[in-house]
Image 1 (cartoon, rainbow, N blue to C red):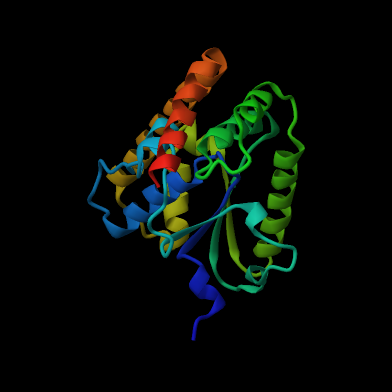
Image 2 (image 1 turned 60 degrees about the vertical axis):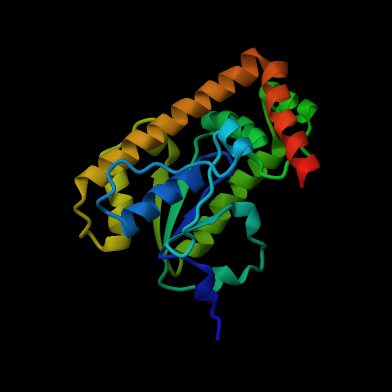
Length: 227
């Protein structure tokens, strides 16, 4: 019989959209399945994902990805016990960047228009994203009561590539026994490189808005007509 735990991974990652959680989940999952692959990097599954530097996590049974808004107030996942969680957190000043990123990384672009992306680029606040951040705090608090929750700053992974922080994530799963230093170095290098690519895309959207959006929405149109 399927249990509630079947919907969870060995590690469960809670993060806001646009914060690179799927990329990190893939890196951590590969560190588990193949701790000798010291130059692994995830590959975007299609042309749109490559253009927007987006990734998918194919190993949910190892690291399951969760967005806070995927949880309802009565979510049964709040009743799980003795599972391991990673809470990837953003400071207020970091949210604008990740919010703009999520506008161009959404997989189906439902309700996302060129004007919406332009508006988010210059907005000083987005209440939807702020509510998602507030709800993440609530979700983490609820899960922390009966489970093991590791708090990790987004900056420490994607900007700093902090080896100690990355190792702490792996050892959250391995009870302090993970020793593959080359894998830790690779995760640090690839996460920082991913962030640099996101920064480049952000600057392209900001400095060459129409040209960049034309490129993205042209691919969307091509894929919609071919399907």
